Length: 306
Image (cartoon, rainbow, N blue to C red):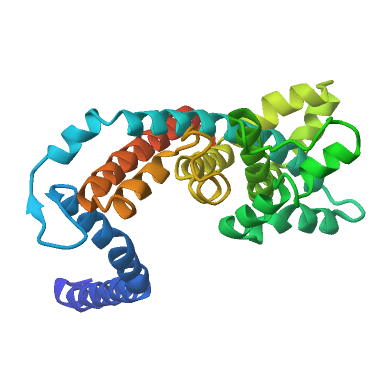
C-alpha cells in the first residue's frame, strides 16, 4: 500500500478517535460538573476561609495559618477527636460483628431469604436524623420503651435514665448505629461472598478443609477488596458522626460525647467562628484521607491475585 493511500485512512481513524473522545467527555460532563460544583468549589472555599478570621457579619480578615496554630492549642478539639477515634473503633467492630454473620446467613438461596434480606436492610432507608429521633423516644426514661420495659420485667429496681451516664448513653448510641447501618454493610459483604466461585469451596471440602479453614483461607483473602470498601465506608461515616450525638445526647453527659464534627458545628454555627471551623474541617479531612490510605494499604490486593 502506498503512502498516499494510507494517509486518508490514518486521518479517518484519527477523526473517529477524536469523535469518540469527544463523546466520552460529553457523557461524563454532568458528573464532572457535579463534582466541581458540589465538591471542588466548596473544598477550595473552605480552604480559603480557613486562612481568614471570617465572622458571620462583617468583613473577613486574612490571618494566614493562625487558625491552624490555634487548633494545636485547642484541647477540646483533641479531646473530641480522641472520643471520635474511640467511638469509631468500637462501632466499626460492632457493625462487622453483626453484618458478617448476617451476610453469611442470607448469601445462599433458602426459603424466605428475600424476606430476611428486606427485614435486615429496612433500617438503612431511615435517615440518621429520623432514626435518632426514634431512639431518643425509645430511650426516654418515662415515656420510652427500654427503661420502662426493663423495670416491668423486674430486671431493674427502678426506671433508669439510660442517657444520664456516659457508659449507658455511649452503648445506647452504639446499639442505634449498629441497628441503622449493619444492613448496608451486610449487603456489601453479601456481594463479596457471592462473587467467590463455589468450586473453590467444593474443592476445599473434598481436600478435607473444615468450615473455619475455608473461611480463613478462601473467603477472607478473596474478599479483601470488598472488606476494604466496607471498612472505609464504615470508618468514614463513624469519623463524621454527628446526628445521633446532637439529637439524642446534645454532647452530654458533661460534654463527654462531643465528636469532632460536633465541635466543628459548635465553633462554626454556635460561636460563629467560621474561619476557625473551616480550619478544623480541613484538619478532619486530612485525618480521613490518612485513615483511608492506611486501610487501603493494609487491605490492598496481594500481587498476582485478581
